[in-house]
Image 1 (spheres, rainbow, N blue to C red):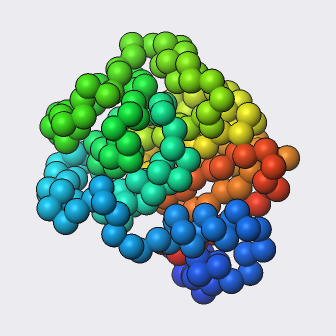
Image 2: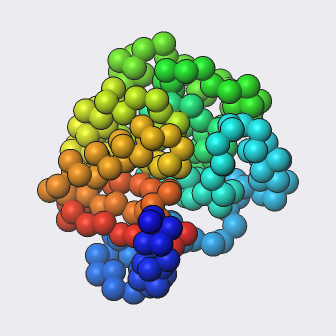
Length: 231
């Protein structure tokens, strides 16, 4: 049913992705210059992305997200330029490295109920000193909140429990934060959390998604709108 629905909505999503019918200046800029940007960036040369592509199939057993999504992770993080990212759940490592490549000053506060897969450690080895692994969720949130005056930025990977993270991420969005889902369908809990956050954010903020890759921007001056894209 979801595949059938995606086929029916494809023409509208293609128009939206090209900026047609998008009246918000922020949304138009974010869609055309970040989500749909096709130009090459300094941080993903062919050699590096080819090496990461070779690693992605063995990183997790589930179907990996297309390589283009790693580029999009880089552009979204680069757009908001956080100094610290809260990373929740098991990561393939590709999205983690894509985020870290935006700035040498960026650090990640990581919390995962399960240990990261072996390939994760290999992929992020060059930037391992900028990833702080926390034994408890509370410690990770505390480290994430240490930077004042910045937009809170979180990245949700392969989580096993959506309830544990829901209230914290909802508060971050209420406060004008950003929550990025590199692969909404990577686990059922990630899908539930995505739906819950979108439902709970009612008064402000924008959602940009193709139903597999998504980002919720909770900036308080933005009207509550949802944009389905063709990525």
